[in-house]
Structures are given as C-alpha cells and as structure tokens.
Length: 421
Ligand code: F3S
Image (cartoon, rainbow, N blue to C red):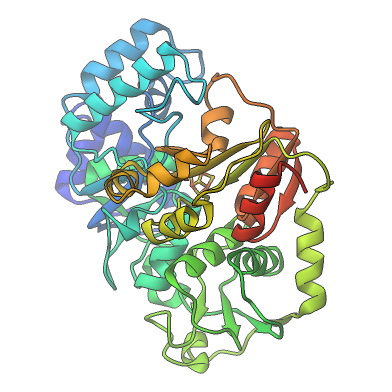
C-alpha cells in the first residue's frame, strides 16, 4: 500500500506502540484485500467491552495475558485518542441491572474500567447495535469503518454510507487512525447488485423480514442482492432484513429500488449488468426458512427474548401497549433488549414501567448472546427460547443448543404470558 509521510511515521513507531500496531495491522489487512491506499473515514463503530478483550488486539500475542500485561496496555491506551466519531457495540452486561442478569462484581468492574478508559480515548460507549438510528448516523457517500454485521449492511443499504464488513479490531484501528484501507464497498464498482431476489409472497411481520433475509444470505452469499416485488420496509423491517442476511454469511449490502439511495430503479441497482442468478422467495420458500430456524418449538419456554438487533423506541412503545395489564407466566423469563439511551427515554415515558410491571425485564447494553457467550455470567435456563429475530434464533441455537421458537413479536408476547408454545 502507498503510505503518506505521516502514515509511514506512524508505521515506524514514531507515535507509539498502539498507533504503530493499528497502522501495521491495517496495512496487512489492506494489502491482503488489494487496497492501494488508505481513505479517510468520518465514523467508526467497534467493540470496547472490557480491557482484557481490547488488549487482545495488541501485543503481546500468542500467550495468555497476565494482569500486568492488561494494566500496562491500559496505561498505553489512555494516551491515545480516536480521530473520528466512534460508537461502541453491545457489551457483556447491563451497566445498571448487572446483578439481575447474573453478572459478577468482577465483570462489572472490568466493564466499568473499559467505560472509563473509553471515555478518555474518545469512544462513545453507547453499547448499541443500532447506533445508526441514534448516536452515529453517517450520510450518503461517507466512508466509515464499522464492525457489527447487522449495522454495516444498514448504513450501506439504507443510508448510502460506505463500510466494509470490518472486524472489531479493524474498526478499532481505523478509529484510532481516522482512515481505513480503500477496497470493497468503498469503491463504486463493488456496490452494484449481483443477484435478483424475486419476492412472490406476502412479507408482513417483522419475523417475515428476518426470514427473507436469512433466505437471501443463504442463497447469495457475498454477492449483493437486489429485491424485486418487495414493498418499502419500515425502519424496523429494514433492520431485520439486513440482520437476517448477514447471519448465514451474506454480504454487507442490499438494494431495494426506490429505497437504497444508490438504486432509484431495479436496472439502476445492477448498473447496467445482468443478474448472475434469480432466486424466488415464495410461500414454500418462506415455510422452509421458518422450519429451518424453528427447532423443537413445542413445549414450555424458559426464555422469551426480543431485541436483536436492539429494539427501537417505537417498538418498545408497542411492546408496552401489548403487555399492559398482562403478566408473564411463572417459570418463564421475558427479556426485551435495547440500548441505554433508548431505555432512558422509555423510562421517562413510562413504557419501561409497564413492561416491568408485567414481569418482563427491559435490559440494555447487550443481548443474551453477548451476556453469556463472552462472559462467565450465570446463565438462566435456556432449554427452549422464543424470539422474533431470525438472527437471534440462529445464533442462540448455535451457541446454546436451545430448542427454538421463531415467530412474530405478538406471538412471542403470547408465549411469554402463557409460558409455552
Ligand atoms: Fe445486537 Fe446482540 Fe443481535 S449485538 S444484533 S442484539 S446478537
């Protein structure tokens, strides 16, 4: 890669170990991906959940980190600052309700240390996977370095911003440098549609959008799908569509004519080329996806969890309406997950109270997957789980081997009240 004089100085270590490592690793990443240079970015979205996790992105590598390694790294990290607006993905516990969700005092302290170090370095520790709706909203044409697969597909496809499907460490390095290797979705020629998805059935519920996403990601892989005969989604439906695509390994971009800023028409989405494949999503294909994601769904449900990606304020308003004067069944836990900033407003508006009066819990800053995969918190029983998110259902089954019910939000709420399917 061609480097400017200043970038070369950073690579030579003139600005300290942290920036040298950030530059060195992005040069390796860019070289492997065929980038010839860096491009300046306006925003980043990465992970910053605990210092022992952040430290893994820097030397020493290849051995378990001792306490002294993490303390030394933390002191070095406190001396650097992010160069662009940078938000943080959900972490490993709810900062207010950590006891309720089974986190230990040690986890709490480690997360709060990351919040403090992150604050000094300029990271906005929002712990949200929908920052593009609240705190970090890039506009059309802005180059970004975002991790979180459900987020970069949204900013590429619905906002017209440009980010590759970066890893957390690549996005962290880019935040510290204010630049990222220029390849992939940063370039016009890589943003055109490759495959057509012909939708020939009704897409009604939020879960249908997730199912369509799962089908698309499975068929198109790293190609860029263009949807035909698909109505304009709401913000929340668009979120589920994108989140569903990325789980079976789909790409970080989709086109819906008239919705995607770069695709005024179907033809415009393909930019003059012909689709390499056409896939039909009809009632039979939809049924097949629901059957694939549901796994032994009948019986007592231990945990109903909705909020993957995080619920918006509007969704929380609806959930509160549906839960008013209702009670979650004994022996079933019902979790709704969102970010702290959205929960704060939900508390002010009284939605949080209605949800909690029903026996459900409104958690923030994370999701069941992150609370229990990455942290040694005490996990509740998850033998059978119900969710309205194709992404959550797939990940929970893969991580916890839970039996799964996957269906629309109303049905999940009914299950929480009844205690089973
Ligand atoms: Fe967000 Fe967790 Fe889902 S981070 S996208 S709620 S897996």
